[in-house]
Amino acid sequence: MENLERISFTVALAAYFLSTLMYLAFAATGNRRTAKIGRFCVAAGFVLHFICIVSRGIAAGRLPLTNQYEFASAFAWGIALCFLIFTGIYQFDILGSFIAPVIFLVIGYASMQSKEIHALMPALQSGWLGFHVCMAIISYGAFGVAFGVSGAYLYRDHSEKCGRAQNGRIPELDVLDNIIYRAVALGFLFLTLCMITGAIWANRAWGSYWSWDPKETWSLITWIIYAIYLHLRLNKGMNGRKSAFFALIGFISVLFTYIGVNTLLSGLHSYK
Image (cartoon, rainbow, N blue to C red; front, side, top):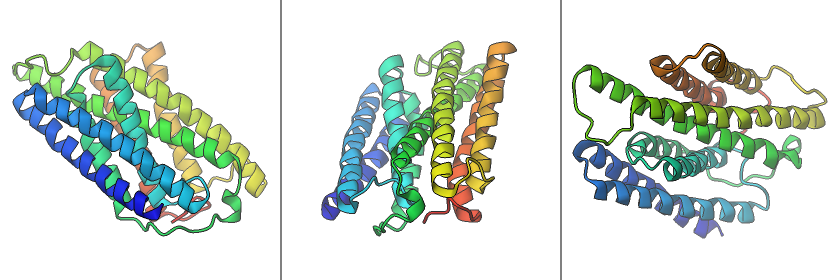
């Protein structure tokens, strides 16, 4: 199983890298064939990545979601999942030019972490592990899509102000704005569920629902950022550039919650 994990991970990494090249080529040339190849590579990488995660779980005898390598790998897989869902719904290829590099960078980060399999520490030996971390993966994946669409929005907005034609590659600004909102709403729902299941799990493991651990604190900060976004969107009619910038800031907070906190701060969630 370890050999299968290693091979499928390496090929998935290569597929995501190729998809990045193809989508960037599409952004530069507008050649739809490169976009189709890019989408196929993401789909192939997604399947191989799933095989990698499953084989890792079988080899470890547990859910493979408990250290830097495993969660970063699952994080990239979650972004790929949400990307495939949103491109399937909205059918615009340029999204891959903004999302595929993010997927590749996250799985690239995973590839630099230790892949050694360790036994679960006592606090992680809980049935709530799968619920909590799976909610985080879907949430972060949706926020990653919102981040990519925000990049597309700001690019088109800047191009229109400069008088550059789009040639139909990037959807209209109102369409992009609506996709950002839907992706953030999806991510916010699952982040809320992630925090609720995490609180229940924490009470079972440490006897307290909330301990102001750095990971908990930054998860709350991220939740507040997106909550403010949704409040302003639904009650104040915020859209356009402000909406896109909010989504960018929110995803930066997501990245710090995972990578920054694990790297720079220590706490109950500092699993290597």
